[in-house]
Length: 148
Image (cartoon, helix red, strand yellow):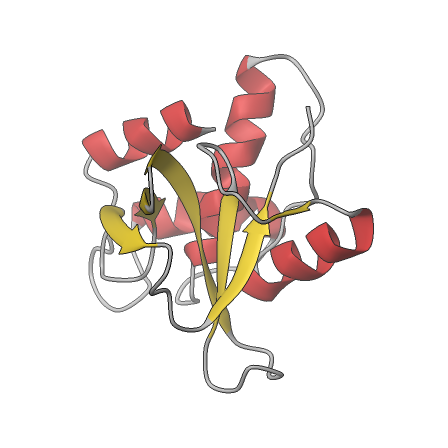
């Protein structure tokens, strides 16, 4: 999944023609049946998971989520939450209210001590890398470890 996310980053995946719009956003949302303009961070992660499964000729390990918090709720219900993030884990944050419906999600690309590097879609207008200090991650809900 990390390799697929890197390929999208290198392809210059971004919004084109307006907020939450364009061919990349449409590609990520399309499997869910939802059309742009819509938030697409969760669809980006779901698309990377699905593409990775297709390449590896396996079944996708999680449903195709279009809501960030769905990753966390599913991970919690299946016992997939991880306290020690590793490459390939999904990181989930809350937005708005901690107990509300809004969130954001990304893919852990690298871990170096107390630092992680992620690949995220829709935090800005493009797929991009971000670096975080694990001791200073406001609004963090948790990390979901993908089975397999």
